[in-house]
Length: 385
Ligand SMILES: *Cc1c(COP(=O)(O)O)cnc(C)c1O
Image 1 (cartoon, rainbow, N blue to C red):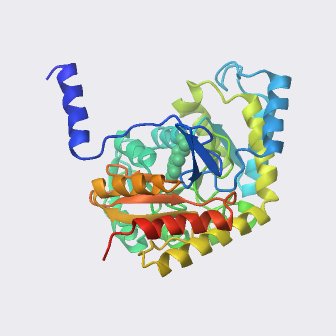
Image 2 (cartoon, rainbow, N blue to C red):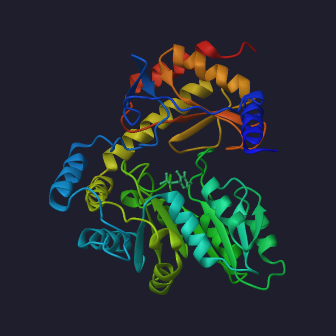
């Protein structure tokens, strides 16, 4: 098959499966309301859980950072791109989250890839929750280790797999709060299961950081768990972009030697680190934002249950409504958009086959009237029983 034939066929197969993806040029996709083709919608698709992407203090910090340090970092952190600003942010994160070290990455995707690629060698076993984010599963697949998937949020399943023969080291991988399901992992039991087999636990807390735990320290903190490796990202609740790996001192030094995503990539702009630092202030002082988010989640869940919707077991800002069929999920998002509510259909391969869903995300920026408008729309589009 030639390149052109392969591409034509690949596009057709996505179209036939109602799984074709397209982007839309949206204005204000991080806000409470967004605009698309001249029309305004309530935004239920953003991961800006605390509404910080438009926070004036964070915007000002980014601006001041750019004035003081310029816009680009100038290079990899191993050359000239690492500054006092980066260092101060790493130290602050490490101290706040209870780790010896933090290393900044440009994205959660890069952090997961770089971490797993640097650590996992031939003979090792990577044990991942089967619903883990693509960046984690793909990192494990690309690694020379063997990938085994354990049942979702099932410590016994992890323990059984972890006890099987392995000549190297074992690394268990999970998320704090799952990106497509919104449920939380039982981190203490998972850690016990992997630690008893002599392995380490990696927790990717992209959706818990900033949102849960004391001052927003995340899922692990909330559960009293201290994973060997913790990944936090700054593109979701922090409202900016970037990520950090939290770990012990020797691990950080090891990553600085072997994590190619750090070594061969331009460091994040110092101004961005200034913005993340300001965002940390907002997160730490963000109890009222978290309380507002909690009220929105409760209002949505009560209302949707009253309408007869079967809710996922999610207490988080991610509230999936399972639809199953791809085309039906697309039709529903279209109908909801006609009613002024913007949300996204999530289809395979992002989620398992047959589990297409509407992924509703709630934020602290939503007002109770917004939630009511969403519920009204969901009532109107409900398939007659
Ligand atoms: C969004 C996400 C990532 C990727 O983080 P980026 O900073 O957006 O690259 C990684 N893991 C999980 C669980 C995510 O939801």
